[in-house]
Image (cartoon, rainbow, N blue to C red; front, top):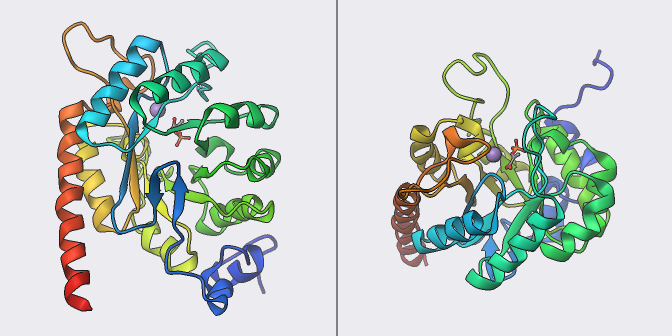
Length: 298
Ligand code: PEP
Ligand code: MN
């Protein structure tokens, strides 16, 4: 007897036929789909580093962080204009003004932008400014939002819900795919599990990375910032995520030069640009090894 509503991996070909490797394999789909965002390729041999502030707070702050992460080797810029905050009294993001700042910073630095959209009514507007739409953990099962993102014509970064199973996560991705949009990158960002919050913000579930790869052809990246919530853990978590086969990283960074303001959100998990550079160097080394193994294999 099965429990009503309970689904398992064996149900994935039915839940998400468009993105299930077991269904699509017979149609000759490639190993991991390459999702192209502007000049950045997810799913290729080199993992992609997306870095930037948690929130867009001002032109000055966003440009300074963007320049620093570019210098450290990041290929894309993150930054929230619309922030999902636990308290409605906390900084909610700059909204449209934040999008304008992101567009200007993109023009200045050449870095493509990923930014979160929370409201289905704002998808078209955010899609005008951003190169990639982020759907956050809290909204992973906001089906009207997923459908609008699917229709937007933009690639989508779909974060895992903080209490979502793999089936629920892939089911959410299928909503985007069903609208004809297969430009989807998945992002593991830590899940709520015992011992919640005692020494890290969430529990980084690295085992899900190879599981995603086994079940779907979509690229999957890891957010070590929200997964740990602790800046000193981010470098090790990033390296581990790459070793587990992650196609990239989404990392929160803040400038640490004299006079730089403390971020208004998630300050405790922001790493400095020097630490980001270490992570990029680790990726450089791993990529060289992979490429030489590939060259020797042929
Ligand atoms: C974010 O990346 O800005 C964010 C809010 O993350 P999450 O949705 O994973 O909590
Ligand atoms: Mn954050």
